Amino acid sequence: MVRIFFHRLVVALIRFGAAGMALLVLIELSFCVIGDSDRHVWLRDSYGPVPAELSDKGVSWGGLVHDRMSATLPVLGLCLSGVFLVGYNWGVLGARLRRFHAARLLSAAFSAFACLPGFWFVVMVAIYSYFHWQRPGFANDVVVEEGPDLLSWWNACILALPAMAAAVGWQIRAVSGVLERELSRPYVRGLFASGYSDEDIFYSNVFRRSLPSLLALSDRTIPALTGSLIFEYAFRYPGMGSLLVESVLLQNYGGIIASSLWMMGWVSIFVLIKDCTVRFLKPDWTS
Amino acid sequence: MTNRRQSKVTRTTRSFLARLWQMRRVLLLIIPYLILFGWLFSGGSRMDVRPGEIYAVPGNPAWESPDKEHWFGTTGNGADLFELSRLAMASSVSVAVVSVSLGIGLALLVTMLFVFDGGKKRFEMLNAASRAGFLMPSMAVLVIFTGGSGGSLVMAISGLIFVIAFHLCPVLTAWFDEGEGGFDVLASYALGLTRREIVMNRILPKVLRRLIGVFAVLVPVVVLVEMALSFMGLTGDRLSCGAMIAYGQVLIIEAPWMAIYPGILASLVVMVLSLLGWRVSAALRTGNIPGIF
Image (cartoon, rainbow over all chains, first blue to last red; front, side, top):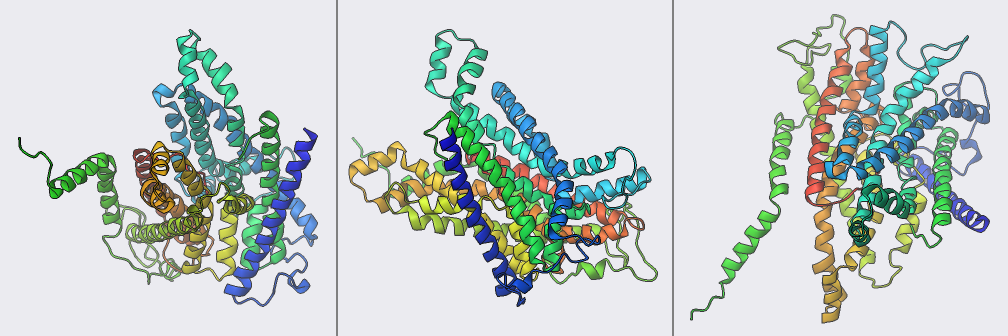
């Protein structure tokens, strides 16, 4: 297990480094080669202190990232819980009730919700809050200074909903697809002919055998989820997603690199955990 | 006894009709696509409309809330919002169709560079690049690329093409690998056909058939992405539902319909495109495509 962990850690670090280099190339290409900026990524002058537009508290880059990260973590936490709990449970249920096309039915609501533009949804919530509840709509309108800060959780939920909708729909279909493929194998028919019950075949054989493949799906939605954090900008939520968009609009490399590396770090961690778990269960696994 | 061999014309016609019958579900789905696209593009393309101008509020605004005459209400200078939203959606759908087509084409081109090599590890380099690039969220890449390069439509389309191609390459490599295992391919090898003949006549047609499903599924997703980019002002000053919502949210108190109704139309169009995409994908057995955005 230790050997597998260190092996995957080295691979993850190499990939993270490669992705980081690609990020620098992307910034240089878009801002300097295609755009008309003369501030190259390798020049020290291109990175200054935190501009006042990003934070009016006069904090350092570390402080800014800490503040933004604390705001984004609840959103990401809600998204991930939704994707893993709903996606996996409903996916298994969809495969179990496959004769009723349950996977399609269960994912339909999420897929339909994913058709709404996420930025429009959060703006609509802001308008509704303003007109019907007579309270400020956008996330930066009011700050709770005393008592439990339920408002920040409400804001996090509003952002998590559109971000996780498409991911949950995809996860349900993918989990169900993996199980249904396993169910179509010849040994399942053999077990059925031998007198095994449906439940026994499904949970004790099919589910157990397809566990590595199911776990391998766990990181597929993470990049899309972290990418959806840019809807924070539409809701004026001070998180890492809005830091990326604001930094791009201000042409501030420090903010772009900090927020992008943070997103890539999250994806790397999930890929590492997935790789270790899957290889622990099935050492000859190939992605 | 008469010779029963059919003429070449009869055989060709029969096989053509048989192929049409096999594709009847997909062909039926073309009708709603034509209706939707016909409705969207019936007013022509108006690329010269600037959202900044139509959402400008004059001293004495002539806006009207939604009624029977103007379903979505009007803007400050009296322009019909429904008509503008339809034009905006036509523009977004055009961008999506162009980006997805070229993205799929580029992905196929890149994959085809490696396909003719018969080695087991022919896709190793492509897959390694894809595993490292997977760490970077596509939306973040698009925001950086379009924002850094000045925020124009051409850059947005270029970014979309690159991102789509990058994420489709591993999918295509998997499909080519899958195609290699077919009985017909093994039989072709046994018969002594060349690798080029096998790839071009046996494996590629199966992959190409699935690409239609990929196109149908990706178009609504890219419409949403394009609208998100235009909401952030990264696709230039041109009509798009995203830009309309961005301008409309400033007028939340005076004219809330300006932000609400373009979004409703956008959601409906994306929903219809998604439903059609899923049906096309199911009819062609494309399979579950990994989420790119």
